[in-house]
Length: 112
Image (tube, rainbow, N blue to C red; front, side, top):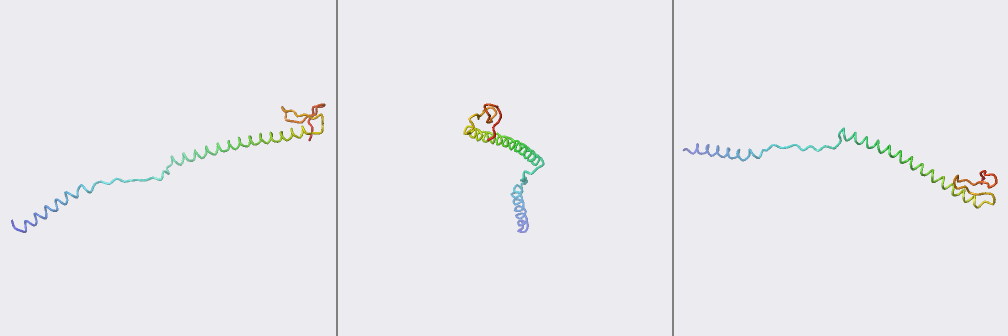
């Protein structure tokens, strides 16, 4: 064989072996998609959660206002009972059921 044909043969073999080694390297790549989590379903769930939170917040506020009113009533009644018991009027007595200071003779409410 001539040196020229040996060179072509050698070049052909090198290019074939190079192609054989590089072919498996070019594998298929997969896409990685990272979503923000902002979908129609998640927005709807967030809106429903917010609506439920607002409803329960309103209910909690009502309960707290009622409890505060009841506490205020008890506080006012406690002060009224003290005034009634310390009254100079000997006919004054405290009625625990109605939380009022009454006159023993007439049963009417005494103004303090």
